Amino acid sequence: MPIEPFRTTSHELLDRLAPASGSSPFVCPGSANAVSRAIHLARLNAAWPGCDHCEWRFDSEGLAERTVLETERIRSQRIDGIRRTEFGIRGQYINDLDRQTAADLTRIFSACLHEQSAQDEVDDEASRSPRETRPGRSVVTQPETSAASFQTVAPVIVGYDGRSASVDLAIGVVAAIREYGMPVLDVGRCTAASIQEAARCFHECCGAILVTGAGSPDAWAGVDIFDRRGDAVPVVWKDFGVQLEHVSSDAATFLKLRLPEAAVRRRWARRLTRQSGFHDVVNFEDRYRDWLLQWYPKQSGLRILVRTEDILLQQRMVWISQKTGLEIICRGRHDSAVTPHIALTMMIPEDDRQFHVLNAFGQPVNSERLAMALNRAMHTQSSHTTAHADAASDRFWLTDAARTGSRRSTESIHDALVTLGLIARLTESKRLTGDL
Image (spheres, rainbow, N blue to C red):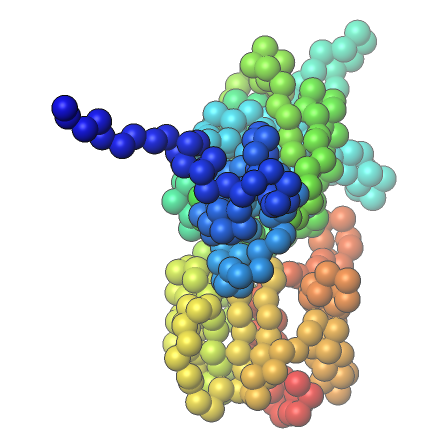
């Protein structure tokens, strides 16, 4: 008589391994039976999806700290949907944020930029002559009952970062802006700091849109929107039928966008004019590098270490080193090789408006301490530049009183490479010795 082979399902195996009822508190979501602590830890170690909402997910004693951090990262990435951020939105590429979705959201951003630009135009009318016009803008004529009103349409600066998904999304972003009727100044591959400098240089623009996934995992993408001063543009999402859902996870708390149906989204496709906006490709990188060079010393023998993964930032550092003689060593953020005789170390993430500074002894320098040291060093010379810091967010920025914005206000500069150049220049002139 043949022997029947042993067969068992995974559920039967768990039932055999599970402890007797009441002897274990570990009950997985969706299950009525308790599991042993060994199975509980094994599921945590494997980042099992059921653990995302389990009340026992924090009981991880016995797992390595590195494993716990990795599983937390996986759980945070598993949360679907499009998140709202300070300057725009983020979402998983293709799964949540594809070219069409990015184009739909860009129509909202374009409407907000145009509305804010029109309001700025009204505010500036009092300070301009009635016959004074702004060159470089197209004019929109809207018929009214008695007379025609003329409304200017300012161009939008568009760029993208080095993520592979950004090029694809940028195509949809540019198309959506042009379909809306707004001109596009395409600066191509850039960074957050350089596109904000472009907005300051092109005074006729109404703002900038950067396709970037900075601050999110590698598989994510996003869109950031800035006004002409580099500030975030307010978006009243409910006016476009978009609901905001408050989501809390182990890693963070954020707002999730609940987009309406396609029929509602089609209403976002309204146009300002009968014609699409023009599309100009602008080589702004050379102009940006020349402006960066003004912040660095003419000649220097300092040795500086810059840690960044961005290829464009590394190329800028090599160019500055060749122009000034400043010895800049570029390495990845996780490169553990020791470099001796370093006067300064700067770590720059994807968003190059932010950075972390280490002094010659490898000690971190917070933003407040850095601002105080720079202001003390610049006080010895009649400088029009001042440094500022926000203790709550640990952010740092510079203001240049000699350079005013389009609305006659002093502009803020959030740029890691500019700050690095100012530190090098003050250190080379012996004004910053020992302050860091």
